[in-house]
Amino acid sequence: MAEEKPHSIAEERDDGRLSAPSAARNIAPILAAIEPFVPSGGVALEIASGTGEHAVAYAQAFPDTIWQPTDIDAQRLISIDAWRAKNGVLNMRVAQVLDATAPSWRTGPFEMAVTVNLMHLIKAPAAQDVVKGVARNLLPGGHWFLYGPFRADGDFRSDSDRAFHASLTEQDPTIGYKEIEAIEAWAVAAGLKRVDLIEMPANNLALVMRQTRE
Image 1 (cartoon, rainbow, N blue to C red):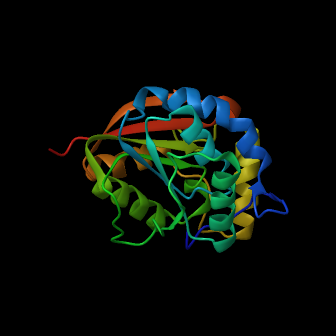
Image 2: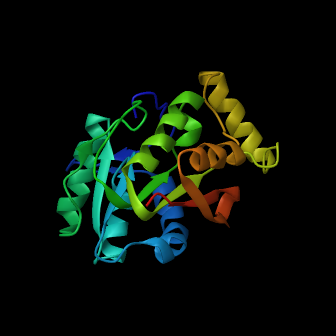
């Protein structure tokens, strides 16, 4: 995203693919968590697709769904398409440029949106624009799957979360962990309704919201 502060280290391969260790670690639990919400025969938007490893995994795991990866970084866009070509997935579209922190972004509409490990890397106003944009671009009954590290009940969920947040704010005091309750409140105000809050490995959370607009 335009205001994202990338922190992960990705290995670059000769064919343009980037590979992030975190993607390999968290993809299996993410696939299990999103399965009940993936629209069979619909189109799913991934916001801030990063290396593209998740997008390929989604496409392979859910072949009846069309997956649209997006990012704003040129190197990541190349990587996403390189992963697509390497794996020959036919239900994954070519990566598109999308700044989901823009105030009035539009694309789609889509039956589902997926956002992984973004909110702690952007400022609070940008995070609100992501939420509003997801609500604006989701079809009625569509789901948003939001995964990442968050504060909850007014505190960090572990000492390692506290330390990671401190490392982020040392780089930029305007970013860092968001309150999951605040994210949900923004989403509700935009017309979404919570369906589930899922405990994930490594103290992460997955918030699933549904578009209630008719």
